[in-house]
Image (cartoon, rainbow, N blue to C red; front, side, top):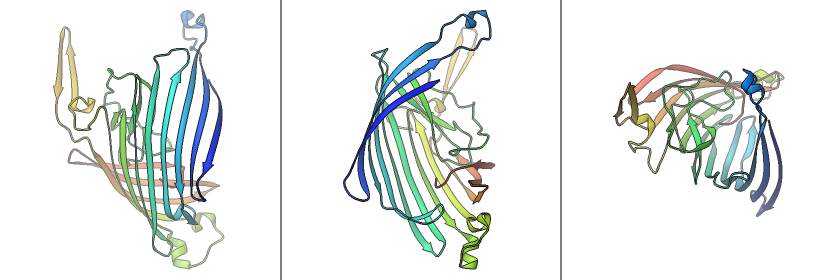
Length: 290
């Protein structure tokens, strides 16, 4: 169970740009499952965290419809987490998210996104690359191992990279590119809004995703776990090293619409990993934009 109290201060430079600062205290209560008598008698434990977060936000985007807009969005974020009851436990994170939208023709826009983040300090944040945000029944790739020498204390997703399960790559840093063409097919054909929410918001899209996640200064380092495979047999331990391509890509088509008040996305994507074209994978999710 987690409880958080925070205060935020925001200073606007103009109608489209601002800087924000947030100071937070977080209390985590860890309750052990009563699977046996030993766990049943264990007392709850508590973690106490302090968080400092600063953001620069620029947003001059203008909506021309649901999930359709023009303009620019930019967010640069710096965060620091410090565990108050363990002085040597902390992590710092730097990240950025840039999005650009433009009109191709009536009821059709293009949208691109560049995003990435890195963590550093005594501890790290683990990024799992792959999949989409708000994925309904997400799938996780257990074949890609995590570097156990890194002191990871938090984990999160690096999205979107469609055509793959979560954890196609992992590490303390990630970077992604997303490109989409969004076309409101029905409104383009009829030239006026319809009463049906489903038809009025029906969109067809084509997309391309490219991304990587890695540990250290470069995704091409042989120290990354996706370039290593450990085989143990009794006292014998063998580490096989290879040079797989750290960057993966996905492409495909999708549909978007609003159903019962929810914006629903269905994408069909094919992944490209290490020169191999993978079978089609479907992603059902519930969120707007990327």
